[in-house]
Length: 346
Image (cartoon, rainbow, N blue to C red; front, side, top):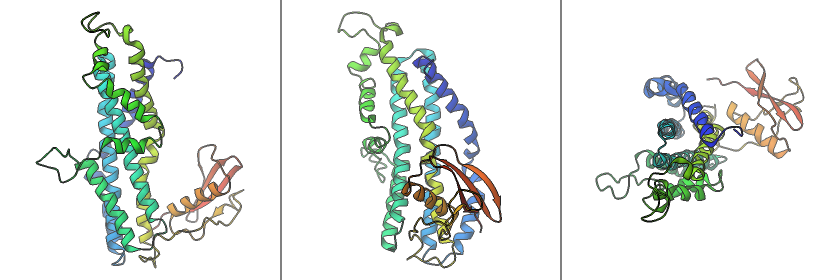
């Protein structure tokens, strides 16, 4: 983007985002698009033991609801992107500033949801206490309810779910974008009816100068607003896929409930990342025999990489599929590493 102006770069990023969002239109009829998966999981949940059935059922609700909520936020960001493109075309500085702040708030919401799901996943890892499992699940359910149904405490007619405070979401986002609070404070100055927003439509002196000056007069400020929006769009492109994968990671926990012999005391037991093989070829691919599901094998793979100094340097490739296994090939600082992952079965 170095060869583009702040305005041109933002237009390209917004347009690209809106174009890619079209692929998610299949979820607009949400119930219809999720019907088969819901049916499949419900059938499998019905076959689980009495102790695991409510846990598996609630975890599926969390996965379903969190994916839905993330899609809701992304559709709002799509509309914000449309509004920002219009603000650029119309040369409307107030619309640019207002929608820039809204954009930051919505990526903070995505970060908050992803963070909360990670807390749940980490809380369940190795957990053997049914009480602790239920507590972790209830915490996440409450968070998702507040994220969707939350209203201001000033709303006397509907205050069952207190809305999440934006500062809480910004705190989660600050772990990914260290100066996000500084950015947000800057945007607030240009949204509230104080000197910042006054400056967008005047030359900055009370009862003196010009009103509604040409864009060149405030080019530095306007470009900073545009760059902030561009940073947000780059974040959505680079970081959001990780948050969007969190509902799938919840599904992998449910799959553990379907394994023969699973009990409340062992269903989330932690497995050590101790593989067979050296990973140098397909025949000697790393294999985790104690992994009970594909996602657990993938999790153990990355734990093994972290513990043994393997850093990923490129995209994962599929080296083969045979005999019920997928052979993943990872590019690392130590060369190509083959990993043998079991395929998902009923």
